[in-house]
Length: 166
Image 1 (cartoon, rainbow, N blue to C red):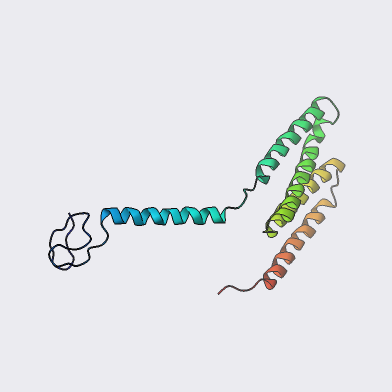
Image 2 (cartoon, rainbow, N blue to C red):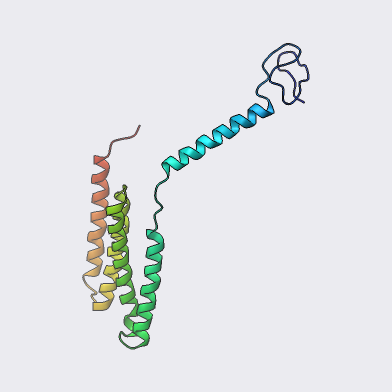
């Protein structure tokens, strides 16, 4: 049993007021549970109002990667492509899948900025695949240097455009 904070009298658990001095003790058990239930309903309603459609692009991309992996394995097993070139084909397709994911996110998501990183990653992976396919040994490091410069410059310029948070 709790005690009254004013007079020290022992009070029942469900008491709202002290039986001796009349000081409000707090809410009784019933009032407490009713208040808690009301708060939980409000939180649930708020969550329902904020509910956004789930992003299934990750699952779709995962499935596409597995399909592409199976296709390239099959092409290598049947001799359509050489096993020595398998990685190049796989990376080229993987990069294309990432670019497609970035395009989908760009056109469907309210947060368009999230698509840029995926697109850049896709371009880099596809570039590695192309470099391996055509055995370009001189130009590919320069391509990555240029891509790195573009990423840095775009991040600096986008930071200047966004408002400062204090």
